[in-house]
Image 1 (cartoon, each protein chain N blue to C red):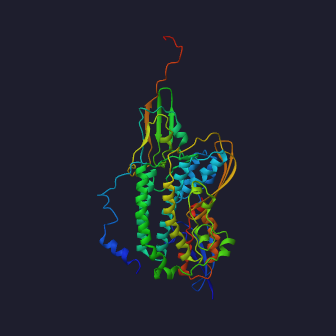
Image 2: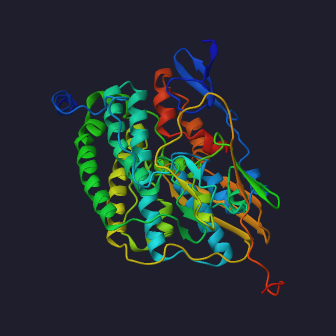
Image 3: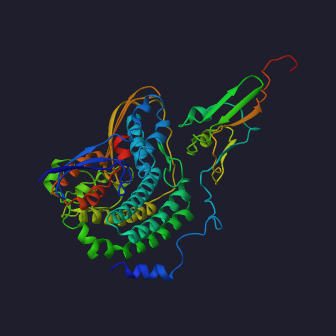
Length: 124
Length: 358
């Protein structure tokens, strides 16, 4: 019987739930969701892959091209890579990736940054 | 009377996590209870030799989802002690804010599950509705709802601005009012009292002898709370351990109910004491040596033993969680109870089995 006032308040009060999926709550400004990489700015240093606690990132490179892969099923969304990225090309959206039924990896390819010319090279 | 052995768990409607109890019954009365563990062992402690000490922060958070922040807090303060650094004051206060928000949502979750264990569904939904406000606070301020991932060695990663501090304070006023509106139901309602008062009594001496921890210990009248060790920012905050003397299920739920109000008070105190400052100090070098560090989790005392050998990887991480300490007292209070009271008593220790098995 002690619960009665709460029950009556709920009966005549506003609904506690939302009419999902027709009404969706906005994401919070700082929510950590989908990890994205602006591959044009990426220098393929591999810091994100070394820092990642769930080891979902790999970075491979040769002299001309670099490959950045993300196994998004393994990503825990901690944001450590985003904090560690020296050129800030990694960022997180506030929304999560849509549900997928097949395991996949995201592979992004980019050109290696041009190195500054060494000092004392001919022509200077 | 012939004895019957009834298996209780690992899959049981009342259990959020798998624990198995072999209950030896005479008629409807429990004579003996034999717990069996080992259904969710993940070998997280051994990962310490594979991952570096910074990556371990995200791993120890996953020991237990509900008190993830407090696990990483304990780990980080252990590494900080080993490296001889101290987190800045603002970081320590922010750690208090988030760890108390975790305690608050953990207690609300437990109170709901406990209500559900004796069939009070509407109370369960009411409490989880309140808890959702706290989850929103966590998500908005840190980025994630449950595993907030804010601790780093040397401080914290996230900050609170003025508007967030105001928002947390305003939300907590409403949350406190809604929790208080349920106080008489949880503590005095006749149906609740009938299922909880005088059930599963653990005396003060038995609680102490069997090494009970947290609300289980305080519900039996021992005023022991690891926050009295003044870790993080608790050295500047006023609080007294919440103690009840009855030692039954009612006392344990009352301790948790009063502690959730106390957590609100501690969050307010910590927010008032926030001053501008650094969020983290830089950790230099590699951890070396041995350290034991303790914190108070929602379920009780949590102990971390860390051993570093001057490399990036720790040599040993040993975690002793409160539920592990509370299983012997549980096995001691079950004999003599009616079979119908077993789910309520098992839930009254707030079992977190994935913590226990790591």
